[in-house]
Length: 190
Length: 229
Image 1 (cartoon, each protein chain N blue to C red):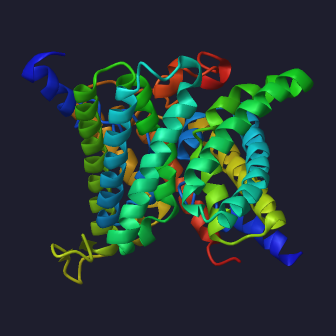
Image 2 (cartoon, rainbow over the protein chains, first blue to last red):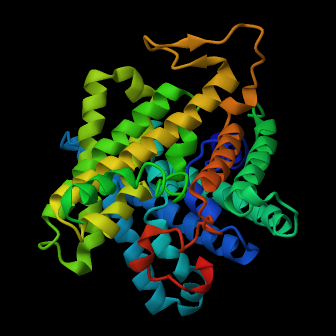
């Protein structure tokens, strides 16, 4: 039980994928303008990450049995791409309200390196099935947390008086540096 | 696009004018994650360049064969294949670099620069320009990473290219700013370099990363919708 709590806290605070490991920066910068889109993207990522971890674990066991583990990158990215398509089709048919909220973010997730990253890290760290899925969900929660915090910071930048050369992305990056710095205070907590 | 100048331009556009990292703002994850040391930055840049040239070449050769409906999975498999090759090569010949790049080697697969060049260039152009485009974009990416890595390593650790024959060490009285070795320093260095590149190219930066700066915008179903603003 203890390991599940520490995994969650580590993924959210000390080892946040976006702010400490710099994985998943593109959606972090691209979709964090508004709180609503941050929440939508975060929800979609948590869901896809959890499912991707659940699907890739048995596939890796199969590859290990056949001694083809070097194919894991190719296999995992294909599974994720396929899976995202499937989820999109299924949501559209079965749960239209959820599709309207999360649907637009789904295509962007295939190239979200945090999803591929978490499945590969699960294997490298030797997690079992349950812990893999839980770790993936925790990482997704950490990603969402970073997006939500940063969307608040960004709405303030828009009102700030920024030097001409720094307008737009450079100012956003410097603000991200400050948010990331504040997260480094959690180091050593676990 | 014909003649010597045309080919030369395919190569040079990636260096500054259409630099994928500092002007296009693509492939942010490796840009921030592996650049705390100049050596790792250079290694990551060259590995990505290898994959980019290879995938551009193969995709350009197959551009009339790959059906439009399944082009993305096809591109991803080709790219992932080259990533596996470079993974093996580094593991065999440069085990130390392989160790320090870790997961980020596998993550080259989802580097949007590579998928972006496949979609925007290699799938529409003959082989030779595609290879040159791959060289130029790869070189631009490598140079940007090396610049970020050098700034971060010099300010953060007081060394440059540590662990190589050309390593330099700053005198001990030079203050070390540990913040530049952390992720926060990466964000900050990138922010400043993007601002400098904006001044050098005298081009208005893309306001947001969103769809405007995204090479996948053509094929992306959420293009133009609310989320992409």
